[in-house]
Length: 252
Image (cartoon, rainbow, N blue to C red):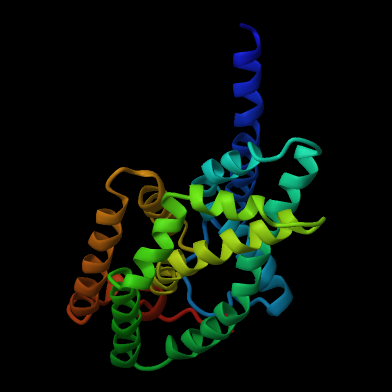
């Protein structure tokens, strides 16, 4: 009878470790950038430093919603669980780190847009909101979200991966689905301000709700509709996109 709680504890441990990693990332973000004005642009960072900051931001926002999948994957591992889960998590984060390359290019472009006249910045903000909102309502978003919400099929696929790189492949594969699911929400972050901690918290809550809440698909669609509404409303209330319309701190 004593094996049950011990087994449950072991199964929960991978999820707990991801939550600890996310808490560390949140602590770093809040301590280092919490008092910073919402900005677009590269925040004055070169590409290597930007990728480090970007990856920590993604760890903070994505790992809490990924923890249940990590715990489920850990159940398929019978030996060297800690080492293999580290490989899974590192590969997952490498996908998001790689996404930092186009994010950096976008940040450079948006940083320049933020220095343009107010009307131009508002138009760019509307386009960002519209693109993010439309994607939230697209079938591709729904397919990627379905894989994140019901990963049993993925676990069966990962179990068939051969060789020593199985965990890296599994982490990267799941990371790709998460990227396909959530890149539109990161695009919205560009309009709110890349280091807008409150926007990060709100979007992290949306990500977690989309993936884990029973009404997650409804949340995704509601965010899409709201984002499209913001694309219209920002012309009347430019402060809705402080990263692009509130003085344009470019960080370049």
